[in-house]
Image 1 (cartoon, rainbow, N blue to C red):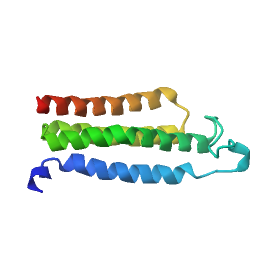
Image 2 (image 1 turned 180 degrees about the vertical axis):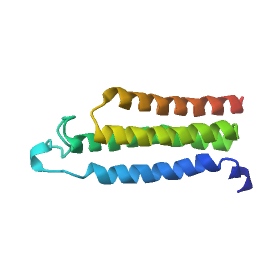
Image 3 (image 1 turned 60 degrees about the horizontal axis):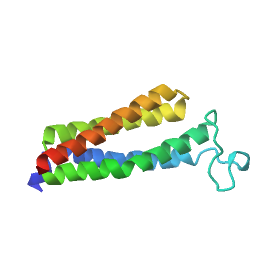
Length: 135
């Protein structure tokens, strides 16, 4: 376990990400009524509807989970620079929390896109760190 101690922020970020997903899941169920549901049970596309935005924030977080978790775990296991792994993982979670807040509370598309881009850059940074450490 000592080998992982230097990655404490990244490992904590993984745990916090699980909490973020759980919270967003709870928010995604608020406001469900038959009038705003499609036949499949998902909300009808309407960015003015806070439930739709909550559902989209949750689904977007779920869609991003695989790449974030894979890149973070790979970087830790390969022994990439702990400073950068911790930084990228921590910034990812902070950016995604901000994105969830903006996504649910507003219709500010540029802010959502900015926070999405920050998270994406963090994932790509983790991938590059992994590749550099491997070769």
